[in-house]
Image (cartoon, rainbow, N blue to C red):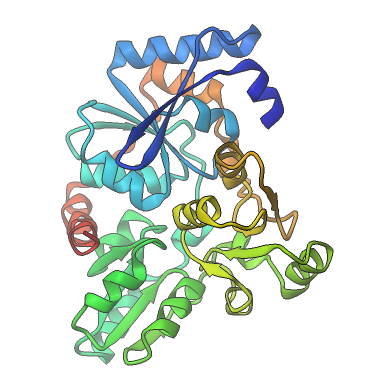
Amino acid sequence: MINFLKDIFTYVILIFNDKTVVKADVNAGGEMKDKIKKILELKKEKGAAILAHYYVNDEVQEIADYVGDSYYLSEIAQRLDEKVIVMCGVFFMGESVKILNPEKTVLVPDENVDCPMAHMADIDKVKEVREKYEDVAVVCYVNSTAELKAASDICVTSANALKIVKKLPNKNIYFIPDEHLGRYVASQIPKKNFIFNNGCCYVHAAVTKEDVEKIKEKHPNTEILVHPECRKEIADMGDYVGSTSGILKYAEKSQKEEFMICTEVGIMYELKKNNPNKKFYSPAKEMICSNMKKIDLDKIIKVLETNEPQVHLDSKFIESANKSLEKMLELAK
């Protein structure tokens, strides 16, 4: 797919706040050319911006105005002048954009593109923990529903979780919904008492120690780059542990030529584009978010034509959840 895309696209690279903004050339050929041209026309007509997560399909990243991880997309959403935003990612990402921009129209190419982990925490459990620990801070990974965000004190992403939790005055931290990211943060801040939730990303949790060892045996000079949603035993093996954007930056700066990438395979598009002379390996075939991969150019065309599906949120959720997201953006500066 990547080689195919290279044949039919030319790239115009713009730098925006150290992030890559990719514009597709309408001179591409065939059926793909027609789809790209249609998207560009509809974007102009609707005054829309397209945001995409690193884990969506290559061709979707290619036509997006802004590509990034959860934190970057949350942050950039507030800066855009466009009144219509197409969020190419799982549904909670569309919710986050709507919470931060309630006056804008937020479209999602497929409202059924969901994240199982986003639902892996319980509001009743949050209430129970608050009753048990007087000074507890409920820290909610941004990979969660609007309901969970509204019930939390602050949101975090994998890129800023450690920085933010260090700044919190609370000794007790209830980290939801991802247990593995919570445990990684806890390992870096031993003075705080963490309460963990039984939740995980099935893609990252699928990586095993044996998977990593097998690649390392075959490619002994490989550096292991790990997303903190992976299990602790995988993080412990990593030469670098960090967010999607952190992995991208590390691979670009490293003098090494081979890397094992312990996160969703969608990141390979950006890695190979930015580092054409380096080699990247995935430790497991299972590192594919099947939900993210459901988004395609046809769905983007349809959502721009029909203005549906839109993200609609109750005003009380927006007000409550906005506090936790705004606090994240404030402390992450």
